[in-house]
Each structure stands twice: as C-alpha cells, then as structure tokens.
Length: 622
Ligand code: ADP
Ligand code: MG
Image (cartoon, rainbow, N blue to C red; front, side, top):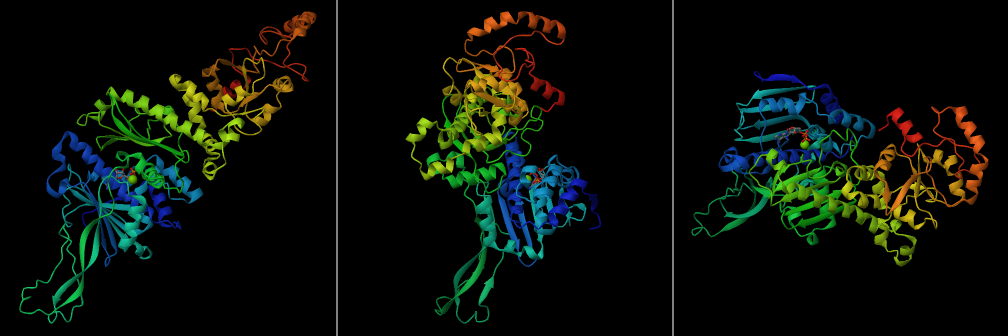
C-alpha cells in the first residue's frame, strides 16, 4: 500500500518468527488459544477502565464484550475479533514487533533446545504463534484514543502500518486476520475450531462466538425451485442469524411444496462463561479444574496440577478463591527473586478482572502458586493504587497463606510415602494411594526452595513451614525425611537436632565430624543447598529442640565421665598447641569427644560462619 509505513522487527522477534515459521512442531493448534487469550486480556482492560468511566465502552454493539470468530473458506481467511481496548498506532509498533519483551530471548533459547512451543504464552510472545498457520497476517485495530490502523506482515523481517481507510470501521477493538497457509486448511473447518475452543478456551470469561453454518430444511414451492437444490446465504453484515427464506406468498393457491436444504449462518456461542470459582466445589470435576488451571496459568503441558484448593471466605472480608500448585516450577521462579514483582494470582472484584500484578495478595515465597481471588468486599470503582492499600487485602492475604499451606500439607497427608511406618500398616494400599505416591517428593523437588525461603521470611508461619521441610540424613537411606521423623528416631537423652552443611552429600558423608556421631548411632541431617546456611540462621529450634551444627563448637553428646580426666591430663599439650598456632589463627584448642579415628579437626565457633558458609560467600552462589 502506498501510504504504509515500514518497520523492521526487533532482531530477537525476527529470530523467533523464523523459528516459528520453519517449525516442524506438530501442534499448530496453539495459535487460536493465544489469540483468544489476547482478546480476553483486551476485554478485561476495557472493562476495568469502564469501572471509573462508563463512556469508554461506547454504545450499541461497541459495548458488547465478546469475541467473534469468522471463516472465509474461499479466501482462506480466519479472523478473530474482539471489542477490547484496541491498540493505538504506537501500541501496534511496540507490542507487535519492535520492543522485545524480556521473555523473547529466553523463549528462543528454550525453543532451540526443546522445540516445544506449548509454553509460548508464558513467555509473553504468544501472538507470534499465528505464523504457525498463516503466512500473512493483518491486525486491524481501533483504540479510543486513535484512528483505525492496519498492521500487516508476511513474517519476512518487516511489518507495515497504515491508517485504515478501506475496511469497515471497528468502533473499538481488534480484528486479527490470518491468511492461512495451504497446509493449514483444517482451520477453516468449523468443527475443528469448535473443538479447539472447547479444549483450550472453555474458561475464558467472555462469550466466544463462531459465525457458524447451519443446515435447515425449508419448504419451497415445488415448481419454482427446480434448478436450485441448495441455496447458500451468507449475511455478514448482520449480527443476528438470518435466513433468506423464500416467502410462500401463494401457499394457498399452490399447495404443492417441497423441502430443500439451505445453509444459513448465525453466531453460535462456544463457551459457557459461568465462572468456575463461583460454582460449588462439589460440582466441579477434576478435569474441569485441570482445564481451568491450564487456561489460567497458560500452561498447556499435559500435566495436571499437583493440588488445588477452592474455597469461599466469609466474615468481614468475603471472597472466593482457587489456588493451584503447578505440576512444575516455571523457568524463572527464583530469578531475581527479591526484585521481581510477580504475583501469579489474578484479582477480581465482583467478577471483574482487576489485575494480575498485585503482589499484596501472597508473600514472595508463595509466588509459585497460580490462582484467582474474587472479592465482594473490595470496592470496584477505585484506582488500582487505592485498591492496593485497602485494609481488606491484609485479611485476604492471611487467609490465602493459611489455605495455601493447608493445601500443601494435604499433599503430604495423601502421599503414602509420607506416612510413618506405624501408620503405613493401617493404610490399605489402594490404587488411589498409588496415584498420590511420591507426590510430596515431587513437590519438594520443584518447590522445596520456596518452603525454605518461607521459613526465612515468614516468622508467623515458621512452624507450619518447618513441618514441610525435607532433607536427607545419615539415616534416611537416600530418601527424604522430615523433622518429625527425625525426632521420632532421636536417641534417648539426645537433646539437640544434629545437622551438617556442605556442598553435597558425598562429601559430607566422609566428614570427620560425623565419625563419632555415626558410631554412637546419632542421626545427622545433611544440608547441601546454599540457601540452607541462611535457613539455619532463622530456624533456631523445632518442637523445643535446638539445632546443632556438628562442625561448630557446642556439640554435646551424652555425658562422658572420662572427658574431664582427659582434659586435665592433656592440659599442657593443648596449652602449648594454642600458643604454637598463635591466637589470630585459632580461638582455642580443646579436647573433645566428637571424633573417632581422625586425630583432630578445626571447628568453627558457635556464632561464626561455618566453613561451608565461607565457601558460599566466596563463590557467591546465592
Ligand atoms: P502477551 O499476551 O503475553 O502480552 P502476546 O505476544 O500474546 O503476549 O501479545 C503481545 C501484546 O500485544 C499484548 O501484551 C497486547 O498489548 C497486544 N495485543 C495482542 N493482541 C491484542 C488484542 N486483541 N487487543 C489488544 N492488544 C493486543
Ligand atoms: Mg498473549
């Protein structure tokens, strides 16, 4: 087009598009849910704005918040239209091509290694999946603050933007036209599109319509219609279903009629938008929760969430919530943990989506959860900033933490591998058990670090979180064990919980600090994650038992009557030794009963850094 402005895609985006266009990835279906999800986001945005300014919605059809899918079989065009917020010219340039999101390069990298496009939505580049099925795409968009524009690209490194002077005015919103590739003909089949919406977009909170054909039988005068057996009527300008019926004006004079098939078109609703969280948990099936999770988390792997909790909070602050433990930790969970503001909960107020960036809803350590909160107590017509300061949020947060920890606790309780030996005998091994077997170990592998960060950060819930802590020990036989299990195995007279820190279990097992303890049958916990050193600065005791690092001073085993005698007889030696090493090098030289074969060890002081901590600080691994 003559007046089109040309732009080049940002390099990362261009690379991503190349990969997509040349992808042999077989599941091309994903583009549709990405487009529907974008349409739904755009509708959420305009609805949110309309809370404080009704005018933004406009009148008539413009105010209809829905998503419309249409097919043009002849021209091989699939279009998806929404009356969402739309994009200004600047938005089009920025959002669809020039400013790469932080996720782009991460996704390109992941694509190159795994080839799996399923997670594209999580990386914030879902739009480009259109090039799985189309070789030419037009985005027509109208934002309230700007004129109507067309963005277009053949994915050849460049895109063009023109003021739209030829298409029908949209009023407001966006229409994406996909000019399908020859091999993507299946997306011109209505049944295929219906299946896809059912499968991936069932829980979109706006009505999704398909301009669907319908065969109807109509009676027409027998003699008049000899030639046309079938008549196709398409009325694209009308929103209502319309049929070009042949009026039977002379029915009385000519009683002879015959039936013919006609194809008519009408908007067919594809989803049922009763929000899942408003339904009673008893009525929602496991499959529905799983699908809802997929759509909420944009996680379309085949896996089911590890756990969920769906509840209603009543009292001063009323809200409904659904929380999920994802099957896997997202790729960037612990990246810039302390700086990133990413909450994974969506906040709704009275069914209206408000934000998914409210980090006041959950503490950082629970950021791995996905879910949704819908509150009737919060005010609707205030700014996000004011909402952020609303006093009810504290109460909501507190309840959410409780429910989240209960949900995690339930994974433990339902996992037969987690019950103690005594309980094990009482539990019948049913098939249901097998499904849950090993679930907590799986949870721990994915999210254990979050629990540890919780112990560090959340003093109020430290004890609950400590119960969820898992580790290996000298007696755990390569399996994970808990503090409660450790305590149940403690030796008579043992007062402290013993642990040792180091880079890995293999190294720790050889530690001279363990010699004597092992020989005497004491259990020692192995802490091998760098975060464990920090953890143990906060976790001072558990169930009235103190934690003792066995490589630090202060290790007390059972009373040793000989120790005093030995100390006395070696007094001269220890004295000499201490002076020989000079006091800058060691604080003290002592006789101890912690060793067995090794003649001597260097012990760190009670309040000083352990040697492992020194190592961590030197390499700054955290
Ligand atoms: P994400 O949806 O994760 O942000 P996408 O690649 O799917 O990433 O979309 C990129 C951006 O393009 C969106 O953030 C949005 O700003 C804009 N966009 C895409 N589709 C629409 C639409 N239908 N209406 C308005 N804006 C849209
Ligand atoms: Mg998207």
